[in-house]
Length: 254
Image 1 (cartoon, rainbow, N blue to C red):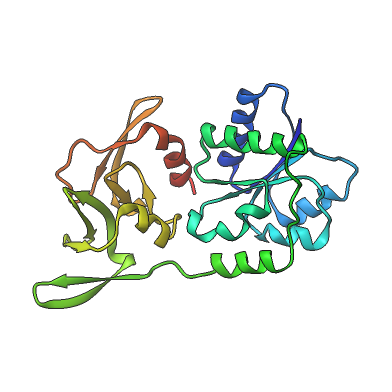
Image 2: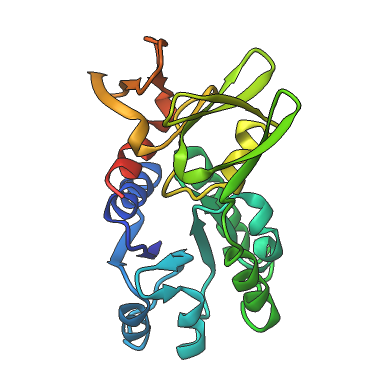
C-alpha cells in the first residue's frame, strides 16, 4: 500500500509514518507534505497513492483547499486536533478521521476501514460542496475566552488568559489562575478539551488540563514516563499519562 501524509507538524507526521510501518511493513510512505500549495503540486504529478492522510489545518490554509485545485480520487483519512463534536459532519464523508494525538489503536482501526473500501465493501465517498463549507463553518467557531464563576453570592468572569490549569478534585472541576485563585466550573475536563484552544491547553492525565505557563519543571523518569511540577501546586505526584507522553512532547514543541 502506498500512502502520502499531508501534515505540517513534523513530529506528528513522523509518528504516523513510524506507526504505519510498525502496523504493516509493506506500507510505503511516498512522501510527507506540509502545505496546501505543495500538496496541489504533488497531486498534479503522475504519482498515485492508495490512501491519503490529511491534516485539516495546514500552515497556509485548510487542506480542503486542495480539493478546489485537484481531483483526489483515492480515500482520505483526515487528521485533526478538533474534538468529535466539530467533525461529525464529515465522519461519513471520508474513510475516517483521527484525533490528535494519533494512537496506534485508532490508526489500526482507520486502516481496517480503508481495507473495507479497497475490497469494495463500501463505496468511496465524495468530498466537496456543502460538506466542506459546513466543516469550515464549524471549525472556525472561536474557542472559549472566559468562564463565569461564583464567589459567594457574586458572579464574576475569568479570562482564559489568566488561567494556568484546570483540575478535577473529588466530584468537582476547578480552574486555577495566575493570581492563585481556585474556582469551580460547571464543565468536565473532557468538555473543556472541546471548548479550549488545543495549542494553549493540553490534557496530561485524567486530572489535569494545563497551559505551558503552568509548568515549572518537566522531569524524565523513563522513556515513557514524565513528571511535571506545576505553579502554585502542592501536588508532587503529577505524571503524564503513558499514552499521552508523545502528544505532550508534540504540544511542548508546538
